[in-house]
Amino acid sequence: MCGITGVFHFDIERQVSAKIVKYMADTLSHRGPDGEGFYIKSNIGLGHRRLSIIDLESGAQPMYSKDKNIALVFNGEIYNYIELRDELIRSGYSFSTTSDTEVLVCAYQKWGMDCLQKLNGCWAFALWDNNKQELIISRDRIGEKPVYFSTIDNSFVFGSEIKSIIA
Image (cartoon, rainbow, N blue to C red; front, side, top):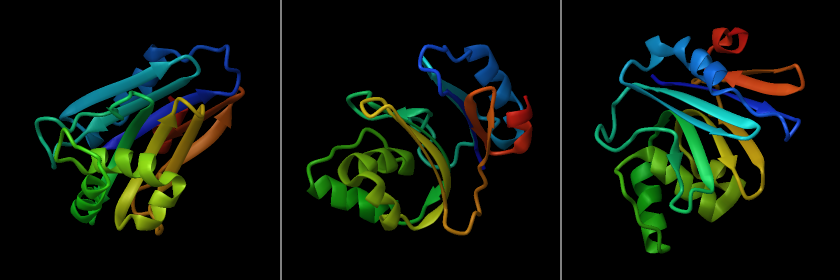
């Protein structure tokens, strides 16, 4: 179990507070006692609390695409990530980790939103595409990994638990 959280201000001139995103993530510390990570850029902030299960050494999040255009925070497990990884390698992708998170980043780069149709597993993730200036939030088909969200003060906020939004 991990925890994800974040803030997206609709006003592109409004800077996300790193302190607030950190506070939101701290409310999820019981979901991920092994580490934390943050992505703060202009009007977007992502937070992650990590429970290390796969790729203990190099699976820290947020995870980025090689060109740093994509930032991803992820909770869950992609059961078919090895098969997807092999398919992506055959397409020319290379990997720095053995993490299903990195496979998810590359799958989005290759297939865009169609990557969701290829996923078998349980997940909740937030992906920031800096080139498109898009925030994508997804969860598995049956909602095993929760993600709650709200709009507050002209901002979109989300988290693995409601208390991170209240924070």
